[in-house]
Image (cartoon, rainbow, N blue to C red; front, side, top):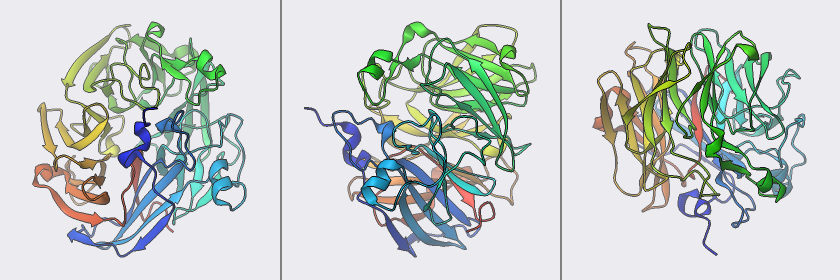
Length: 449
């Protein structure tokens, strides 16, 4: 049989957990960067190549601690789930078992920090897993019993209120849930929005007035589920594609739905309301998803698009901003839900091959590229603002990188406002970091350890 591509090359898992102190640095790390660059992705402990789907591998967190111009340590740790506990020992995973838990309770897609707690999270309803400052698993959490079901991979922080907003879905539900988690880490709002089918809702977005729901044509395939396929979501073009605007304090009946041409969106770059009261969404559009590749997200060229929604009209204005392949969009997240000028992506080549980094100036319609050539694969870049400069792009971009020639890993630090000049520093990691999904910067003051 053909080898599973998501178990080959830098998609393949690494062998076990490691720790390394006082890493080698080329260049000079900005002394302002005091915190942890955290990243998470799948690192399956016992994969079956015939059925393995990239989205389902056991979670592994990678962390780089920077402090006072030094790369103090790197650590990789499994996020404990039932399978990891069985393989590595150590007893069952502490904490509650959620009513929507799938399989072993994997958490592998994003790692965030909220209310002083590091949380490994995943979509489709599994509970978050709390981690300590050294990335060891504390246990599953339901936010002190306030979580009514499960959680998601992409909560978004409202910079004005400090609340997290997210969209929760589950193959056990016929609705999408708007969930709000307060500054203290407890749930303050849960509103169930019915949908005509059980669609896969990977991400969401907020604006000043709205919570934004993506109801797109990747849906639960009951035949695949009945047959025991581990990832039973399929492209379903007859389902239609639409975006829902739910007032942030509204109920399910207040949602307005707005139709887009069939596609799939894993990640919006940002959303905001313009002077006309229209909602502007910058998104990475996939032409379809899980139509032919049943192991991962490889269904043709992506593009960056702008969707403009008049809340009073059903149709959406769709404009192509950049037709070159890219994914994993990020911004200065202090502008989440607000107008933004700059955005940062990873280029995609030949399907889902990661390339260099991309900076978009959406006001001027310009794109800059930073690329180190074939086999130098950047992962999602995280923006860290420079507190001494109020300009939107004043800060640093931090990205894990895989070097295929040496089968090694690095963390690269660039100035976002001097993007094409190249890195100000490289941290040389003790081994490669597999291609995964998402991560964030956690400043020391946000979660003391």
